[in-house]
Amino acid sequence: MSRQRISIIFLSISIYFCFVTYGLISVICLLFFKNMIPEKKINEILSVADIARIIGEFYPLKTAGRNYKILCPFHQEKTPSFVISPDKQIFHCFGCGKGGNVFHFIMEHEKLSFPEAVKWVGQKVGVIVEDIAAGNSPKLYPVFKLISSLFEKFLYSPCGKTAYQYLLKRGLKDKTLKDFHLGYAPSAEIQLEEIKKLGLASDQLIKGGITTRKSNREYPYFRDRIIFPIINAQGKTIAFGGRSIPAKTSAAGGDNSMPKYLNSPENEIFEKGKTLYGLNLARKNILTEKKAIIVEGYMDLVSLYEAGVQNVVASLGTSLTRWQIRILSKLADTIYLVYDSDAAGERASLRGLELFVEEGLNPLTVNLPYPEDPDSFIKKYGKEKFNACLKSSQNIVEFYLNCLKKKHDPKTIEGKVNISKIILPIIKKVQSSLRKNEYIKILANALNTDEKVLIEEMSGKSKQSEYEKKINYRSPNPNEEEMVLSSMIIENDILKEDISEFGDGNLRKIALEIYSKVKEKKQNKPSAILNLLSPNVRETLSKIMANPFVPEYTPQRIIQDWRKKNKERKTRNEQIEKLQHL
Ligand SMILES: [Zn+2]
Image 1 (cartoon, helix red, strand yellow):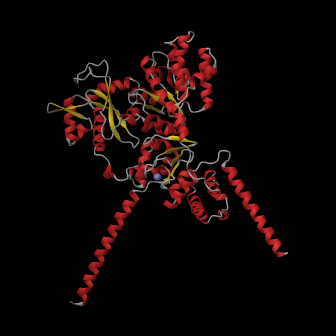
Image 2 (cartoon, rainbow, N blue to C red):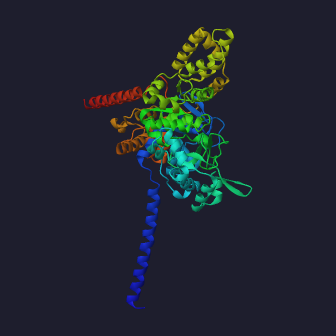
Image 3 (cartoon, rainbow, N blue to C red):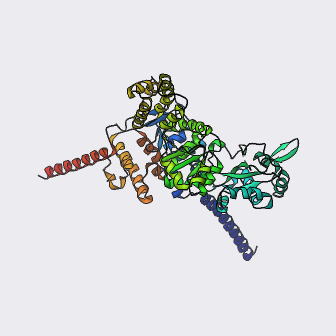
Protein backbone atom coordinates (compact mmCIF):
# COMPACT_ATOMS: atom_id res chain seq x y z
CA MET A 1 0.00 0.00 0.00
CA SER A 2 1.35 3.35 -0.97
CA ARG A 3 2.13 5.92 1.63
CA GLN A 4 -0.38 8.23 0.06
CA ARG A 5 -3.17 5.70 0.39
CA ILE A 6 -2.37 5.05 4.02
CA SER A 7 -2.53 8.72 4.82
CA ILE A 8 -5.84 9.05 2.99
CA ILE A 9 -7.25 6.17 5.05
CA PHE A 10 -5.91 7.79 8.22
CA LEU A 11 -7.39 11.10 7.26
CA SER A 12 -10.78 9.51 6.55
CA ILE A 13 -10.73 7.69 9.86
CA SER A 14 -9.84 10.88 11.70
CA ILE A 15 -12.57 12.83 9.94
CA TYR A 16 -15.03 10.05 10.73
CA PHE A 17 -14.12 10.11 14.42
CA CYS A 18 -14.26 13.88 14.46
CA PHE A 19 -17.84 13.70 13.21
CA VAL A 20 -18.81 10.98 15.64
CA THR A 21 -17.29 12.90 18.56
CA TYR A 22 -18.85 16.15 17.36
CA GLY A 23 -22.20 14.43 17.03
CA LEU A 24 -21.93 12.91 20.48
CA ILE A 25 -20.93 16.22 22.03
CA SER A 26 -23.84 17.97 20.32
CA VAL A 27 -26.28 15.37 21.56
CA ILE A 28 -24.90 15.62 25.09
CA CYS A 29 -25.02 19.44 24.94
CA LEU A 30 -28.55 19.36 23.64
CA LEU A 31 -29.67 16.97 26.35
CA PHE A 32 -27.84 18.98 28.98
CA PHE A 33 -29.20 22.36 27.98
CA LYS A 34 -32.66 20.99 27.42
CA ASN A 35 -32.59 19.89 31.02
CA MET A 36 -31.44 23.26 32.31
CA ILE A 37 -34.10 25.20 34.15
CA PRO A 38 -33.15 28.80 34.93
CA GLU A 39 -32.10 29.26 38.54
CA LYS A 40 -34.59 32.09 38.91
CA LYS A 41 -37.40 29.71 38.01
CA ILE A 42 -36.12 27.06 40.41
CA ASN A 43 -36.08 29.57 43.24
CA GLU A 44 -39.47 30.92 42.29
CA ILE A 45 -40.92 27.45 42.65
CA LEU A 46 -39.05 26.91 45.88
CA SER A 47 -40.46 30.13 47.30
CA VAL A 48 -44.08 29.09 46.76
CA ALA A 49 -43.89 25.35 47.30
CA ASP A 50 -44.53 24.11 50.81
CA ILE A 51 -42.66 20.91 51.56
CA ALA A 52 -45.04 19.89 54.34
CA ARG A 53 -48.05 20.21 52.09
CA ILE A 54 -46.44 18.32 49.27
CA ILE A 55 -45.26 15.45 51.47
CA GLY A 56 -48.61 15.68 53.27
CA GLU A 57 -50.35 14.77 50.03
CA PHE A 58 -48.58 11.41 50.12
CA TYR A 59 -48.58 10.68 53.86
CA PRO A 60 -50.56 11.90 56.85
CA LEU A 61 -48.30 14.18 58.87
CA LYS A 62 -48.06 14.10 62.62
CA THR A 63 -46.96 17.21 64.44
CA ALA A 64 -43.85 16.96 66.57
CA GLY A 65 -43.13 20.35 68.08
CA ARG A 66 -42.70 22.81 65.26
CA ASN A 67 -41.94 19.99 62.84
CA TYR A 68 -43.77 17.01 61.39
CA LYS A 69 -42.79 13.40 61.63
CA ILE A 70 -43.70 10.41 59.51
CA LEU A 71 -42.48 6.88 58.93
CA CYS A 72 -39.67 7.18 56.40
CA PRO A 73 -40.86 6.41 52.86
CA PHE A 74 -37.30 5.46 51.90
CA HIS A 75 -36.48 2.79 54.44
CA GLN A 76 -38.36 0.30 56.60
CA GLU A 77 -38.99 1.50 60.14
CA LYS A 78 -41.47 1.11 62.97
CA THR A 79 -41.04 4.43 64.75
CA PRO A 80 -40.97 7.58 62.68
CA SER A 81 -37.62 9.26 62.23
CA PHE A 82 -38.41 11.20 59.09
CA VAL A 83 -38.66 14.86 60.03
CA ILE A 84 -40.15 17.67 57.95
CA SER A 85 -39.42 21.23 58.97
CA PRO A 86 -41.97 23.68 57.55
CA ASP A 87 -39.97 26.64 58.91
CA LYS A 88 -36.83 25.66 57.04
CA GLN A 89 -38.58 23.88 54.18
CA ILE A 90 -36.41 20.79 54.47
CA PHE A 91 -36.74 17.12 55.37
CA HIS A 92 -34.36 14.67 56.94
CA CYS A 93 -34.55 11.03 57.92
CA PHE A 94 -32.54 10.28 61.03
CA GLY A 95 -32.75 6.59 60.18
CA CYS A 96 -31.35 6.36 56.66
CA GLY A 97 -29.81 9.82 56.39
CA LYS A 98 -31.70 11.02 53.34
CA GLY A 99 -32.45 14.71 53.36
CA GLY A 100 -32.86 17.87 51.34
CA ASN A 101 -35.54 20.24 50.14
CA VAL A 102 -38.82 19.53 48.38
CA PHE A 103 -37.08 18.81 45.05
CA HIS A 104 -34.85 16.16 46.60
CA PHE A 105 -37.88 14.54 48.17
CA ILE A 106 -39.73 14.38 44.85
CA MET A 107 -36.60 13.13 43.05
CA GLU A 108 -36.30 10.25 45.47
CA HIS A 109 -39.99 9.57 45.89
CA GLU A 110 -41.09 9.80 42.26
CA LYS A 111 -37.78 8.56 40.83
CA LEU A 112 -37.23 11.70 38.80
CA SER A 113 -34.19 13.69 37.70
CA PHE A 114 -33.64 17.10 39.28
CA PRO A 115 -35.20 19.08 36.40
CA GLU A 116 -38.12 16.67 36.26
CA ALA A 117 -38.65 17.11 39.99
CA VAL A 118 -38.54 20.90 39.62
CA LYS A 119 -41.13 20.65 36.88
CA TRP A 120 -43.25 18.30 38.99
CA VAL A 121 -43.28 20.69 41.93
CA GLY A 122 -43.79 23.65 39.57
CA GLN A 123 -46.91 22.04 38.25
CA LYS A 124 -48.20 21.53 41.79
CA VAL A 125 -47.81 25.17 42.69
CA GLY A 126 -48.83 26.63 39.36
CA VAL A 127 -45.46 27.85 38.12
CA ILE A 128 -44.83 27.22 34.46
CA VAL A 129 -41.70 25.29 33.54
CA GLU A 130 -41.26 24.83 29.81
CA ASP A 131 -41.33 21.25 28.61
CA ILE A 132 -38.00 19.62 29.35
CA ALA A 133 -38.35 16.63 27.13
CA ALA A 134 -41.02 17.20 24.54
CA GLY A 135 -41.19 13.49 23.78
CA ASN A 136 -42.77 12.75 27.14
CA SER A 137 -45.80 14.98 26.87
CA PRO A 138 -49.10 13.19 26.38
CA LYS A 139 -50.56 12.99 22.90
CA LEU A 140 -53.69 14.85 23.96
CA TYR A 141 -51.98 18.25 24.20
CA PRO A 142 -51.69 18.70 20.43
CA VAL A 143 -55.26 17.43 20.01
CA PHE A 144 -56.63 20.07 22.37
CA LYS A 145 -54.46 22.72 20.78
CA LEU A 146 -55.87 22.06 17.32
CA ILE A 147 -59.47 21.71 18.45
CA SER A 148 -59.22 24.86 20.55
CA SER A 149 -58.06 26.89 17.53
CA LEU A 150 -60.83 25.34 15.50
CA PHE A 151 -63.50 26.38 18.05
CA GLU A 152 -61.99 29.85 18.15
CA LYS A 153 -62.14 30.05 14.37
CA PHE A 154 -65.81 28.98 14.39
CA LEU A 155 -66.71 31.87 16.72
CA TYR A 156 -65.67 34.42 14.11
CA SER A 157 -67.12 32.50 11.15
CA PRO A 158 -70.75 32.75 9.93
CA CYS A 159 -71.86 29.70 11.94
CA GLY A 160 -70.69 31.38 15.16
CA LYS A 161 -72.42 34.67 14.55
CA THR A 162 -75.18 34.23 17.15
CA ALA A 163 -72.69 33.10 19.77
CA TYR A 164 -70.35 35.98 19.01
CA GLN A 165 -73.14 38.53 19.18
CA TYR A 166 -74.36 37.03 22.43
CA LEU A 167 -70.91 37.51 23.96
CA LEU A 168 -70.75 41.11 22.76
CA LYS A 169 -74.20 41.68 24.19
CA ARG A 170 -72.93 40.37 27.51
CA GLY A 171 -70.50 43.28 27.45
CA LEU A 172 -67.33 41.44 26.45
CA LYS A 173 -64.86 43.03 24.10
CA ASP A 174 -62.83 41.32 21.41
CA LYS A 175 -59.63 41.55 23.43
CA THR A 176 -61.15 39.62 26.32
CA LEU A 177 -62.57 36.99 23.98
CA LYS A 178 -59.09 36.57 22.52
CA ASP A 179 -57.35 36.56 25.92
CA PHE A 180 -59.49 33.60 26.98
CA HIS A 181 -59.47 32.04 23.50
CA LEU A 182 -63.25 31.76 23.67
CA GLY A 183 -64.74 29.75 20.87
CA TYR A 184 -67.87 28.21 19.51
CA ALA A 185 -68.80 24.58 18.88
CA PRO A 186 -71.30 24.50 16.01
CA SER A 187 -73.75 21.78 15.00
CA ALA A 188 -72.57 18.22 14.61
CA GLU A 189 -72.27 18.24 10.81
CA ILE A 190 -70.20 21.41 10.46
CA GLN A 191 -68.02 20.42 13.40
CA LEU A 192 -67.29 16.86 12.26
CA GLU A 193 -66.46 17.98 8.76
CA GLU A 194 -63.88 20.48 9.99
CA ILE A 195 -62.47 18.12 12.62
CA LYS A 196 -61.93 15.51 9.90
CA LYS A 197 -59.75 17.96 7.99
CA LEU A 198 -57.37 18.13 10.98
CA GLY A 199 -56.45 14.50 10.45
CA LEU A 200 -56.59 13.56 14.12
CA ALA A 201 -56.89 9.93 15.18
CA SER A 202 -60.43 9.14 16.19
CA ASP A 203 -59.38 7.27 19.35
CA GLN A 204 -57.53 10.41 20.49
CA LEU A 205 -60.64 12.52 19.91
CA ILE A 206 -62.70 10.11 21.98
CA LYS A 207 -60.02 9.91 24.66
CA GLY A 208 -60.04 13.68 24.97
CA GLY A 209 -63.84 13.81 25.07
CA ILE A 210 -63.98 15.89 21.89
CA THR A 211 -66.26 13.32 20.31
CA THR A 212 -68.26 10.37 21.59
CA ARG A 213 -69.28 7.21 19.81
CA LYS A 214 -72.88 6.04 19.78
CA SER A 215 -73.97 2.96 17.82
CA ASN A 216 -70.89 3.15 15.66
CA ARG A 217 -71.34 6.80 14.83
CA GLU A 218 -69.25 9.65 16.09
CA TYR A 219 -70.83 12.73 17.64
CA PRO A 220 -69.16 15.90 18.84
CA TYR A 221 -69.41 16.26 22.63
CA PHE A 222 -70.17 19.99 22.49
CA ARG A 223 -72.85 21.14 20.11
CA ASP A 224 -74.05 24.71 19.68
CA ARG A 225 -72.21 25.94 22.72
CA ILE A 226 -69.89 28.78 23.57
CA ILE A 227 -66.56 27.23 24.40
CA PHE A 228 -64.32 28.24 27.30
CA PRO A 229 -60.98 26.47 26.87
CA ILE A 230 -59.62 25.28 30.21
CA ILE A 231 -55.92 26.06 30.22
CA ASN A 232 -53.42 24.66 32.72
CA ALA A 233 -50.55 26.42 34.48
CA GLN A 234 -48.27 25.52 31.57
CA GLY A 235 -50.52 27.47 29.24
CA LYS A 236 -51.84 24.34 27.55
CA THR A 237 -55.47 23.62 26.82
CA ILE A 238 -56.52 20.46 28.67
CA ALA A 239 -60.32 20.57 28.48
CA PHE A 240 -63.29 22.72 27.52
CA GLY A 241 -66.23 24.22 29.29
CA GLY A 242 -69.29 24.70 27.09
CA ARG A 243 -72.14 27.10 27.79
CA SER A 244 -75.45 26.88 26.01
CA ILE A 245 -76.69 30.04 24.34
CA PRO A 246 -79.91 31.07 26.05
CA ALA A 247 -83.14 32.25 24.46
CA LYS A 248 -81.88 31.58 21.03
CA THR A 249 -83.77 30.57 17.96
CA SER A 250 -81.50 27.67 17.46
CA ALA A 251 -80.83 27.27 13.79
CA ALA A 252 -77.90 25.00 14.47
CA GLY A 253 -80.01 22.28 16.01
CA GLY A 254 -78.55 22.93 19.44
CA ASP A 255 -78.84 20.99 22.65
CA ASN A 256 -80.85 23.43 24.72
CA SER A 257 -82.39 20.57 26.64
CA MET A 258 -78.91 19.88 27.99
CA PRO A 259 -77.47 21.63 31.07
CA LYS A 260 -76.41 25.26 30.87
CA TYR A 261 -72.79 24.35 31.54
CA LEU A 262 -71.00 21.25 30.34
CA ASN A 263 -67.37 20.35 31.02
CA SER A 264 -65.14 17.96 29.10
CA PRO A 265 -64.99 14.57 30.79
CA GLU A 266 -61.78 14.02 32.75
CA ASN A 267 -58.89 12.68 30.70
CA GLU A 268 -55.22 11.83 31.18
CA ILE A 269 -54.29 15.53 31.27
CA PHE A 270 -57.41 16.95 32.90
CA GLU A 271 -58.42 16.35 36.49
CA LYS A 272 -61.28 18.60 37.56
CA GLY A 273 -60.27 18.93 41.18
CA LYS A 274 -56.74 19.86 40.21
CA THR A 275 -57.60 22.67 37.87
CA LEU A 276 -58.69 26.24 38.46
CA TYR A 277 -60.25 28.04 35.53
CA GLY A 278 -58.47 31.27 34.70
CA LEU A 279 -55.37 30.63 36.83
CA ASN A 280 -53.15 30.87 33.75
CA LEU A 281 -54.17 34.52 33.34
CA ALA A 282 -54.71 35.43 37.00
CA ARG A 283 -51.58 33.93 38.51
CA LYS A 284 -49.35 36.95 38.03
CA ASN A 285 -51.90 39.39 39.41
CA ILE A 286 -52.65 37.16 42.37
CA LEU A 287 -48.95 37.02 43.17
CA THR A 288 -48.51 40.80 42.99
CA GLU A 289 -51.68 41.69 44.85
CA LYS A 290 -51.38 38.74 47.23
CA LYS A 291 -55.16 38.52 46.95
CA ALA A 292 -57.24 35.98 45.08
CA ILE A 293 -60.92 35.99 44.30
CA ILE A 294 -62.80 32.74 43.75
CA VAL A 295 -66.03 32.71 41.76
CA GLU A 296 -68.22 29.87 40.54
CA GLY A 297 -68.81 30.39 36.86
CA TYR A 298 -66.77 31.01 33.75
CA MET A 299 -68.96 33.94 32.81
CA ASP A 300 -68.46 35.53 36.26
CA LEU A 301 -64.73 35.31 35.82
CA VAL A 302 -64.61 36.62 32.27
CA SER A 303 -66.90 39.56 33.14
CA LEU A 304 -64.77 40.52 36.13
CA TYR A 305 -61.69 40.31 33.93
CA GLU A 306 -63.33 42.58 31.37
CA ALA A 307 -64.05 45.11 34.12
CA GLY A 308 -60.41 45.06 35.23
CA VAL A 309 -60.64 42.66 38.18
CA GLN A 310 -58.00 40.19 37.06
CA ASN A 311 -56.98 38.20 40.11
CA VAL A 312 -59.90 35.82 39.78
CA VAL A 313 -60.18 32.05 39.38
CA ALA A 314 -63.23 29.81 39.03
CA SER A 315 -63.71 26.40 40.56
CA LEU A 316 -65.11 24.62 37.47
CA GLY A 317 -68.60 24.35 38.85
CA THR A 318 -67.65 21.83 41.53
CA SER A 319 -67.03 22.54 45.16
CA LEU A 320 -63.48 23.51 45.95
CA THR A 321 -60.95 20.78 46.54
CA ARG A 322 -58.05 20.76 48.96
CA TRP A 323 -55.66 20.87 46.02
CA GLN A 324 -57.24 24.04 44.65
CA ILE A 325 -57.14 25.68 48.05
CA ARG A 326 -53.49 24.78 48.53
CA ILE A 327 -52.50 26.19 45.17
CA LEU A 328 -54.19 29.48 46.00
CA SER A 329 -52.79 29.64 49.49
CA LYS A 330 -49.29 29.54 48.03
CA LEU A 331 -50.03 32.54 45.86
CA ALA A 332 -52.25 34.75 48.00
CA ASP A 333 -52.50 35.92 51.60
CA THR A 334 -56.14 36.89 51.36
CA ILE A 335 -58.76 34.82 49.60
CA TYR A 336 -62.23 36.09 48.83
CA LEU A 337 -65.12 33.80 48.02
CA VAL A 338 -67.60 35.60 45.80
CA TYR A 339 -70.42 33.22 45.08
CA ASP A 340 -73.94 33.86 43.89
CA SER A 341 -76.21 35.55 46.39
CA ASP A 342 -78.77 32.75 46.18
CA ALA A 343 -79.11 29.73 48.45
CA ALA A 344 -77.03 27.48 46.21
CA GLY A 345 -74.18 29.96 46.31
CA GLU A 346 -74.46 30.10 50.06
CA ARG A 347 -74.26 26.32 50.32
CA ALA A 348 -71.22 26.26 48.06
CA SER A 349 -69.50 28.81 50.28
CA LEU A 350 -70.31 26.87 53.43
CA ARG A 351 -68.81 23.69 51.98
CA GLY A 352 -65.69 25.48 50.83
CA LEU A 353 -65.08 27.31 54.09
CA GLU A 354 -64.41 24.33 56.30
CA LEU A 355 -61.74 23.01 53.94
CA PHE A 356 -60.03 26.38 54.03
CA VAL A 357 -59.92 26.34 57.80
CA GLU A 358 -58.51 22.82 57.76
CA GLU A 359 -55.78 24.08 55.47
CA GLY A 360 -54.94 26.83 57.94
CA LEU A 361 -56.56 29.59 55.93
CA ASN A 362 -59.16 32.15 56.81
CA PRO A 363 -61.00 33.21 53.69
CA LEU A 364 -63.38 36.13 53.54
CA THR A 365 -66.80 35.75 52.00
CA VAL A 366 -68.32 38.52 49.99
CA ASN A 367 -72.03 39.14 50.12
CA LEU A 368 -73.46 40.48 46.92
CA PRO A 369 -76.90 42.02 47.21
CA TYR A 370 -79.64 39.56 46.24
CA PRO A 371 -80.21 38.45 43.45
CA GLU A 372 -76.87 39.42 41.89
CA ASP A 373 -74.04 37.16 40.86
CA PRO A 374 -70.51 38.52 40.20
CA ASP A 375 -71.26 38.81 36.48
CA SER A 376 -74.49 40.80 36.85
CA PHE A 377 -73.12 42.86 39.74
CA ILE A 378 -70.00 44.10 37.97
CA LYS A 379 -72.03 45.05 34.93
CA LYS A 380 -74.58 46.97 36.93
CA TYR A 381 -72.32 48.63 39.49
CA GLY A 382 -68.76 48.51 38.14
CA LYS A 383 -65.33 47.84 39.60
CA GLU A 384 -65.38 50.46 42.40
CA LYS A 385 -68.55 49.11 43.96
CA PHE A 386 -67.24 45.57 43.57
CA ASN A 387 -64.07 46.50 45.43
CA ALA A 388 -66.19 48.09 48.14
CA CYS A 389 -67.96 44.74 48.52
CA LEU A 390 -64.59 43.04 48.97
CA LYS A 391 -63.78 45.53 51.73
CA SER A 392 -66.98 44.77 53.60
CA SER A 393 -66.48 41.00 53.36
CA GLN A 394 -67.21 38.73 56.29
CA ASN A 395 -64.94 36.36 58.17
CA ILE A 396 -65.98 32.74 58.47
CA VAL A 397 -67.81 33.07 61.77
CA GLU A 398 -69.78 36.08 60.62
CA PHE A 399 -70.69 34.28 57.43
CA TYR A 400 -71.78 31.08 59.20
CA LEU A 401 -73.79 33.12 61.68
CA ASN A 402 -75.53 34.97 58.90
CA CYS A 403 -76.51 31.77 57.15
CA LEU A 404 -77.48 29.87 60.29
CA LYS A 405 -79.57 32.70 61.72
CA LYS A 406 -81.96 32.20 58.85
CA LYS A 407 -82.71 28.71 60.12
CA HIS A 408 -82.12 28.94 63.85
CA ASP A 409 -83.25 31.70 66.16
CA PRO A 410 -80.25 32.76 68.25
CA LYS A 411 -82.57 34.15 70.93
CA THR A 412 -83.88 30.71 71.86
CA ILE A 413 -81.92 28.08 73.76
CA GLU A 414 -82.43 25.57 70.97
CA GLY A 415 -81.19 28.10 68.44
CA LYS A 416 -78.07 28.85 70.48
CA VAL A 417 -77.28 25.16 70.86
CA ASN A 418 -77.83 24.40 67.19
CA ILE A 419 -75.78 27.32 65.93
CA SER A 420 -72.86 26.64 68.27
CA LYS A 421 -72.97 22.94 67.41
CA ILE A 422 -72.16 23.82 63.81
CA ILE A 423 -69.77 26.71 64.31
CA LEU A 424 -67.70 25.52 67.28
CA PRO A 425 -66.13 22.49 65.55
CA ILE A 426 -65.02 24.83 62.78
CA ILE A 427 -63.56 27.41 65.15
CA LYS A 428 -61.77 24.54 66.85
CA LYS A 429 -59.91 23.81 63.62
CA VAL A 430 -58.58 27.37 63.36
CA GLN A 431 -54.86 27.24 63.88
CA SER A 432 -54.12 30.66 65.37
CA SER A 433 -55.10 30.89 69.05
CA LEU A 434 -55.54 34.62 68.76
CA ARG A 435 -57.91 34.25 65.85
CA LYS A 436 -59.73 31.44 67.62
CA ASN A 437 -60.26 33.71 70.59
CA GLU A 438 -61.60 36.53 68.45
CA TYR A 439 -64.00 34.17 66.71
CA ILE A 440 -65.27 32.93 70.06
CA LYS A 441 -65.90 36.53 71.07
CA ILE A 442 -67.94 37.16 67.93
CA LEU A 443 -69.95 34.00 68.47
CA ALA A 444 -70.53 34.69 72.17
CA ASN A 445 -71.72 38.16 71.32
CA ALA A 446 -74.09 36.94 68.63
CA LEU A 447 -75.57 34.25 70.84
CA ASN A 448 -75.55 36.52 73.87
CA THR A 449 -73.75 33.95 75.93
CA ASP A 450 -70.51 33.58 77.88
CA GLU A 451 -67.20 33.08 76.06
CA LYS A 452 -65.97 30.68 78.74
CA VAL A 453 -68.97 28.43 78.21
CA LEU A 454 -68.29 28.29 74.49
CA ILE A 455 -64.60 27.49 75.05
CA GLU A 456 -65.59 24.71 77.45
CA GLU A 457 -68.08 23.40 74.92
CA MET A 458 -65.44 23.50 72.21
CA SER A 459 -62.60 21.78 74.07
CA GLY A 460 -63.91 18.26 74.40
CA LYS A 461 -61.10 15.74 74.76
CA SER A 462 -59.56 15.04 71.39
CA LYS A 463 -58.26 11.61 70.57
CA GLN A 464 -55.86 12.98 68.02
CA SER A 465 -54.00 15.17 70.44
CA GLU A 466 -53.52 12.17 72.73
CA TYR A 467 -52.00 10.31 69.82
CA GLU A 468 -49.78 13.22 68.98
CA LYS A 469 -48.46 13.22 72.51
CA LYS A 470 -47.28 9.65 72.09
CA ILE A 471 -45.03 10.58 69.21
CA ASN A 472 -42.09 12.25 70.76
CA TYR A 473 -38.74 13.19 69.50
CA ARG A 474 -36.11 10.53 69.07
CA SER A 475 -33.69 12.47 66.93
CA PRO A 476 -30.27 12.82 68.54
CA ASN A 477 -29.48 16.10 70.24
CA PRO A 478 -27.52 18.28 67.88
CA ASN A 479 -24.12 19.20 69.15
CA GLU A 480 -23.44 22.81 69.89
CA GLU A 481 -21.50 23.63 66.75
CA GLU A 482 -24.13 22.00 64.55
CA MET A 483 -26.66 24.31 66.14
CA VAL A 484 -24.38 27.24 65.41
CA LEU A 485 -24.05 26.35 61.73
CA SER A 486 -27.78 25.81 61.44
CA SER A 487 -28.43 29.16 63.12
CA MET A 488 -26.07 30.94 60.75
CA ILE A 489 -28.02 29.61 57.80
CA ILE A 490 -31.36 30.48 59.30
CA GLU A 491 -30.17 33.99 60.12
CA ASN A 492 -28.60 34.42 56.66
CA ASP A 493 -25.33 35.50 58.16
CA ILE A 494 -22.92 32.72 57.31
CA LEU A 495 -20.92 35.19 55.19
CA LYS A 496 -20.42 37.42 58.21
CA GLU A 497 -18.95 34.69 60.38
CA ASP A 498 -15.46 33.31 60.74
CA ILE A 499 -15.88 29.73 59.55
CA SER A 500 -12.37 28.78 60.58
CA GLU A 501 -13.51 29.05 64.21
CA PHE A 502 -15.41 25.76 63.92
CA GLY A 503 -13.56 23.29 66.13
CA ASP A 504 -14.96 20.18 64.43
CA GLY A 505 -12.93 19.61 61.26
CA ASN A 506 -15.75 17.88 59.40
CA LEU A 507 -18.19 20.63 60.22
CA ARG A 508 -15.62 23.24 59.19
CA LYS A 509 -15.38 21.57 55.77
CA ILE A 510 -19.16 21.54 55.38
CA ALA A 511 -19.42 25.14 56.50
CA LEU A 512 -16.77 26.08 53.99
CA GLU A 513 -18.63 24.48 51.10
CA ILE A 514 -21.81 26.23 52.14
CA TYR A 515 -19.95 29.50 52.63
CA SER A 516 -18.44 29.42 49.15
CA LYS A 517 -21.72 28.44 47.46
CA VAL A 518 -23.69 31.13 49.27
CA LYS A 519 -21.06 33.69 48.31
CA GLU A 520 -20.90 32.58 44.69
CA LYS A 521 -24.64 32.27 44.05
CA LYS A 522 -25.78 35.01 46.45
CA GLN A 523 -28.34 32.55 47.68
CA ASN A 524 -29.21 32.55 51.36
CA LYS A 525 -32.52 30.75 51.78
CA PRO A 526 -31.91 27.43 53.57
CA SER A 527 -33.95 25.33 51.16
CA ALA A 528 -32.32 27.01 48.15
CA ILE A 529 -28.83 26.45 49.57
CA LEU A 530 -29.56 22.73 49.60
CA ASN A 531 -29.79 22.83 45.80
CA LEU A 532 -26.19 23.92 45.54
CA LEU A 533 -24.46 21.33 47.71
CA SER A 534 -22.94 17.95 47.02
CA PRO A 535 -25.21 15.08 48.18
CA ASN A 536 -23.14 14.26 51.27
CA VAL A 537 -22.94 17.81 52.50
CA ARG A 538 -26.62 18.31 51.68
CA GLU A 539 -27.66 15.35 53.79
CA THR A 540 -25.45 16.43 56.67
CA LEU A 541 -26.93 19.91 56.52
CA SER A 542 -30.51 18.66 56.35
CA LYS A 543 -29.77 16.49 59.38
CA ILE A 544 -28.43 19.42 61.32
CA MET A 545 -31.25 21.69 60.31
CA ALA A 546 -34.07 19.24 60.86
CA ASN A 547 -33.15 19.10 64.51
CA PRO A 548 -35.45 21.32 66.52
CA PHE A 549 -33.92 23.94 68.73
CA VAL A 550 -34.36 24.02 72.42
CA PRO A 551 -37.36 26.37 72.54
CA GLU A 552 -35.89 29.13 74.70
CA TYR A 553 -32.95 29.51 72.35
CA THR A 554 -33.15 31.75 69.35
CA PRO A 555 -30.72 31.37 66.44
CA GLN A 556 -29.35 34.83 67.20
CA ARG A 557 -28.61 33.83 70.78
CA ILE A 558 -26.81 30.68 69.68
CA ILE A 559 -24.55 32.58 67.30
CA GLN A 560 -23.86 35.28 69.88
CA ASP A 561 -22.93 32.69 72.49
CA TRP A 562 -20.63 31.01 70.01
CA ARG A 563 -18.93 34.31 69.14
CA LYS A 564 -18.57 35.12 72.81
CA LYS A 565 -17.03 31.74 73.52
CA ASN A 566 -14.61 32.08 70.60
CA LYS A 567 -13.59 35.50 71.85
CA GLU A 568 -13.10 34.24 75.37
CA ARG A 569 -11.03 31.37 74.08
CA LYS A 570 -8.86 33.75 72.08
CA THR A 571 -8.31 36.02 75.06
CA ARG A 572 -7.53 33.00 77.21
CA ASN A 573 -4.99 31.78 74.65
CA GLU A 574 -3.43 35.22 74.44
CA GLN A 575 -3.17 35.37 78.20
CA ILE A 576 -1.60 31.91 78.28
CA GLU A 577 0.84 33.01 75.62
CA LYS A 578 1.68 36.12 77.63
CA LEU A 579 2.21 34.01 80.72
CA GLN A 580 4.53 31.73 78.80
CA HIS A 581 6.59 34.75 77.75
CA LEU A 582 7.03 35.98 81.28
ZN1 LIG B 1 -35.22 6.85 56.07
